[in-house]
Amino acid sequence: MLKCQELEKVIRMFNDRSEAAKNARVSVELRDGSLWDLGEIFLATNKIIGNRETHRLVIRINKEIASPGEIETKL
Image (cartoon, rainbow, N blue to C red; front, side, top):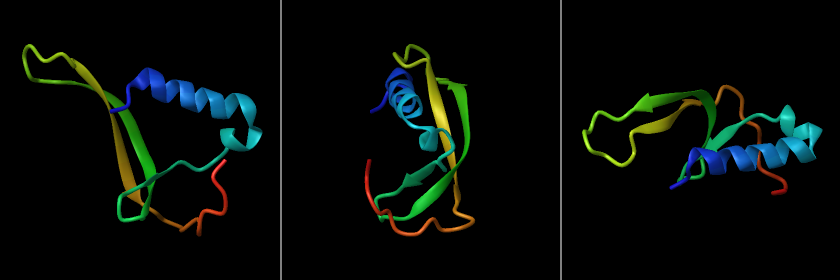
């Protein structure tokens, strides 16, 4: 499980170190290896009373419009 603060640290690290990262396309890779585009991010409240996690960051993905091709290197 990834917390929002940890996600922010990773994104900030990429953006602080690379101009290319600031303009990079954001994709989500599923277990089957397919890549999906990031569509929307929003904050939602949980309806379960007494739950430790009162809010969650929801990331919606969309099927890729144009394939980026194979990943050459992981930086």
